[in-house]
Image (cartoon, rainbow, N blue to C red; front, side, top):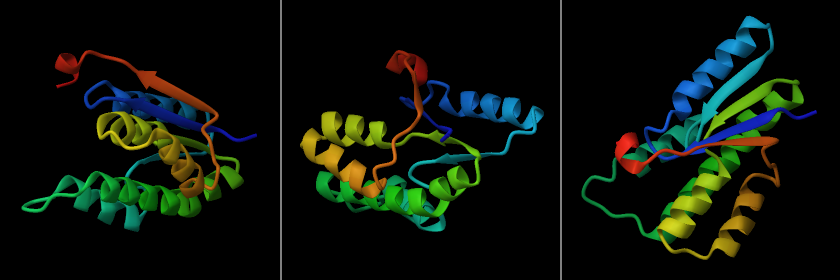
Length: 142
C-alpha cells in the first residue's frame, strides 16, 4: 500500500505547519516517513528551485517555467519519492502536480490538458493517495 500524501494551498496557508505536525505524529509512533517539497527534494530540484525563486534580471516564460517544474518533479519522483514508497515509508510532500496545474495552467494560462499529460509523464504516472488542500484567503496567507 502506498502512503503518498500531498499538501496543497497558497503561500502562508499552513502547509508546512501541517506537514511538520503529521511528521511528528508518525515519528511518535515509529512509522518511517519522508518529508519533502516541490520544487526541491533532490539536489537537482533544489537547483531548479533556486532558478525559479531567484530570477534576478531575467524572466522565465510560462512554457519554460512549466518544463522546469516538470524536470524537478521527474527527478524528485525517481530519486526520492518512489524509493521511499518502495521501502514502505509514508511520503509527505509540500506541493505536487496540483500546484503545477493551478499555477501554470490556471495562473499562467497554459493548456491544462497538456499539463495533466506532462504531470503524468514527469511523475511516472504516480498519483498521491491523498491530497490535503488548505484554503485560506490570500490576505491571510500573505
